[in-house]
Length: 101
Image (cartoon, rainbow, N blue to C red):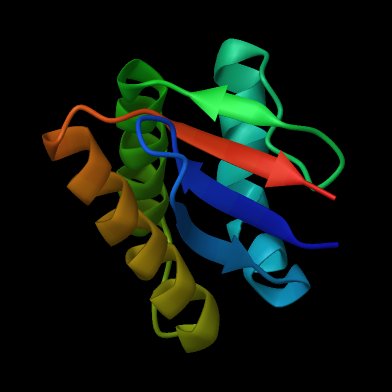
């Protein structure tokens, strides 16, 4: 199931998270749900404001500190790419919408 990410201001498509990408990001999404009670999943739509973007970045940073990044280079690459996208929209103060199938 694809999970697509859009800008909230212009409704422009940003990136689609394939099953593989979602699986790699699942550990971050689980921690996100644990911390604030909101789920990011392929079956629902979720709006992520800049406060929640900051939380996702923080969770990624925590993951990076405690994980051997060489153990799963594919996951590391996907998580770092996702962090880069989040940083761009945090800097521009733009919320994101995750749209599930």
